[in-house]
Length: 442
Ligand code: NDP
Ligand code: HSE
Image 1 (tube, protein in one colour):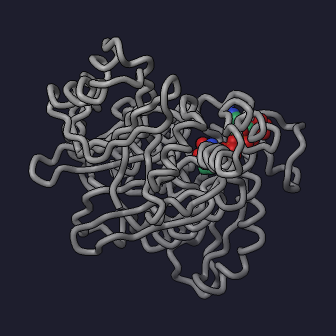
Image 2: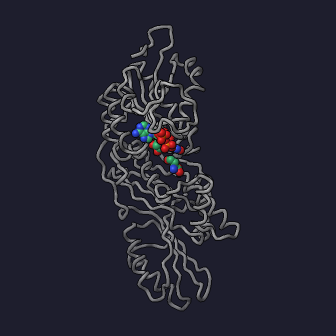
Image 3: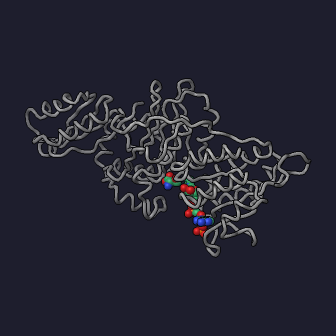
């Protein structure tokens, strides 16, 4: 190993092996070069990008990489004794998982931005880091440039956190913002057209499924649950519903009632039982809630704690430079820890019951296209009552063939609300049961 013990007056040189040189890897290489002098002045550690592993040696890169640094052999990088720490910016499960395990086994701290990997194999990787007594840091994996992992791991370590709610996918926030703007300007706010616009502008992938159907946000929600509550939650535990069924009509109803619609990750723990609920779905957010002001592709994470009250973290959740900024912060931390012979830890992760969506409770918005005739409201509200779902607000919009009843419930259990929806659909006077959207309070 290089002089990482900090015993000499010479700077400790830390040689970084970067796996992947795409959006994040290239921005990280650039940032290390830009900030190396500053970091050296502050810490006495000289950071150097020593190896960069890629898949295609001849692909054009956003940064210049000297001959001899670029390699196609990522495995050689993690097994190179002259490499002090490793940044994994490849993505996906394999080979990233195997490379990280090998790097840790070889005593190298690892920094990763890989939410998919952590949300599926996190427990195995955290245990490997613990065994190796090395850092495994992943600030960039959740909400890109926003330092929410460090806040949860360190600043809020002792806080009795009750709930974390976040706009943790920029693509969907961009699409919902544009749909809302269109509706408020008197347009249709059509989902498919807005998605196409987002794709043309580079905000959505050609295959947008991971973002628009909530998989990406679900992975991030699983990681937040793990770090906030110290429990084992994997991507498969997370209920996720995307934005592809959100309509301009629903956005318009929400607006009239004082709400906007956001795709939220909601991570909660019941204080008594310790059960956790982790879900991602379109949600009606009161316009006065701080999350309602988070527009375009920005992300924000809202943390609620028993002592600290409410905190909001806001910023860029994606993009090479913001994500590399979070990776770089971890690199500096890991380098300092390595020199001191220490490492951070998530502590013991406990098993916890993750509630099924049926067992969770919320307020709900429900809209029904109905026949405009005597007794309809009575018939409809009777169904709510028979399932013990209490109505907080009700109104009729439109008349005759355009009659629509809109309800907001008090907090009710999902299973009861779903049963209500099913039975409402069987009533002759109900032509269509519109979107069911969960609502969060102020
Ligand atoms: P890219 O697809 O842009 O880059 C991936 C890089 O990995 C490429 O340089 C590719 O090489 C390289 N690579 C792929 N397979 C191998 C392999 N077997 N061996 C060596 N190199 C390989 O991805 P991003 O930079 O966008 O994302 C990287 C990680 O960061 C992912 O986990 C992602 O989820 C995460 N992340 C990304 C954000 C973003 O805004 N982009 C935000 C937050 C997290 P080549 O260039 O030759 O094809
Ligand atoms: N595709 C993600 C987003 C960024 O739209 O927020 C990477 O997590």
